Image 1: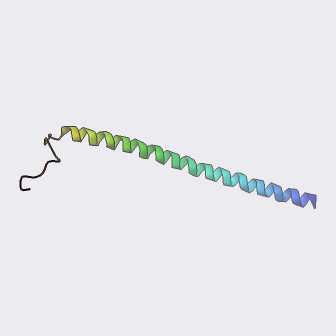
Image 2: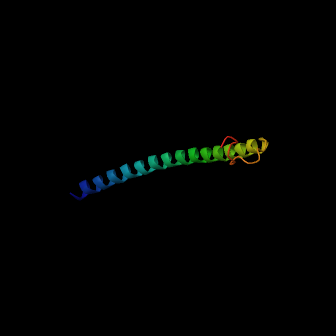
Image 3: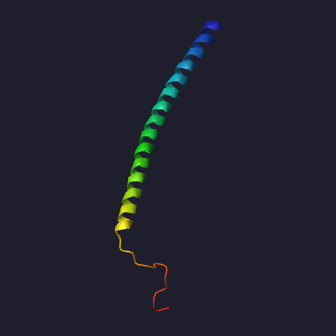
Length: 68
């Protein structure tokens, strides 16, 4: 009975190690994707600010149109 129990524990341990390794791989891929997405967001934010700086200043975008 002890040997059967030991084999069961070893099988469970092997399964858990495999599961942990696969989960770690998923987390690593997600982190790489997150890093790329954050870099792209930073780039887009910079680009939007650059384009906004190039727009002519309308001088009062919140003012009422003359027909009010």
